Amino acid sequence: MATKVGIIGAGGMVGYHIDGFRQGGGEVAAIADMNLDAACKAAEAHNIETVYESVDDMLDSDIDAVSIIVPNKFHAPLAIQAMEAGKHVFCEKPPALNAAEAAEMIEVAETYGATLMFNFNNRARPESREMMKLIEEEEIGRINSAQAKWIRRTGIPGFGGWFTNRALSGGGPMIDLLHMLDLAMYFMGYPEPAYVMGQTFDDFIKDKNFKGPWGIPDREDGITDVEAAAHGFISFETGQVLNFQISWAEMVKREEVSVVFQGSKAGGKVERLFGTDGFDDTAIDTCELYVQEEGKSVNKILRAEACEDMGRINSAANFVETIDGKAEPLNTPDQALILMKIIDAVYESAKSGAPVAV
Image 1 (cartoon, rainbow, N blue to C red):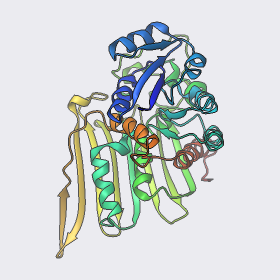
Image 2 (image 1 turned 90 degrees about the vertical axis):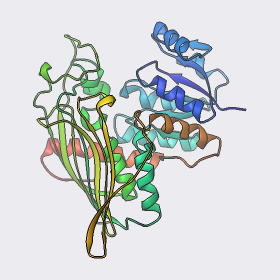
Image 3 (image 1 turned 60 degrees about the vertical axis):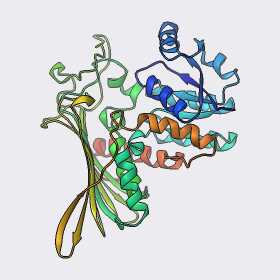
Image 4 (image 1 turned 135 degrees about the horizontal axis):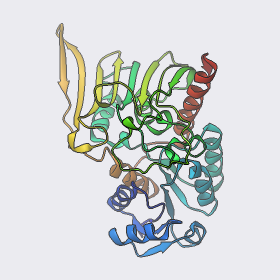
């Protein structure tokens, strides 16, 4: 029988999750949202039979797994509730507000034997998979250093909403646009971090000239207390190093999403450039390998199928395939915990002005 998935939250990512679960052979059995009208509209648009206003009621049903698409503050509590109810969990990024919450989620998953995965969808992009094949085939060698970047010029997702409220989001772009940091460490073998040095910047965070194009409404009575940009450096216990630049609003030419790395045998780059912040139809994808052949510098283009959704559908499909034993998980809870420890350390370092041991 197909794995039955229930979705918590009828937000903007819901269509990708639904398509992915179905692609992976699962059945999307229900959707729950405290905004019942939003749940009904999503259910009608995607041919889902059952709608719940109460998460409790959905967890009492015969579903096997849940997908969590809600503000960050509720990721850990809902995941824990679902796993305690005997369900597997696929959670949107970030894993939680902080590493302590992520550790609690892992403990519950181990106690109840639940599959716990997160939507680190850029690992599921065709370009990333092509690069990972070369890494696994030892064509790259040891990746000594990498540079992770997700930068925007005008990408603040509304003012005063949950994205800009630290109590609800956990932070700004550092925690929101964590994908390239995750992808770089994925390529590097997810080494254990030793030290983190980070700095955050709040220039433009209240300047409405830097608002993103997604149509998220502002809340005049809301809170905006997160960063606009974060830069930093990570040294790992293995001797590998990684620097990152992540921003919603920063004086750059265009939105850029990239991982560049330098290996002992070859270097490489996975990149997406946007002509207009936030819109895929202007995007240019690049996947390259840098090698030396017969004394000459050779740059090779790696061909991969087009994927405008940046791996979101494939990522959700992998969750169902993992539950069914048809695939290995693209991410693990232990990796999510390492990522959250680094994010915590960036914010701590920015506050203290000193490197932080992880």
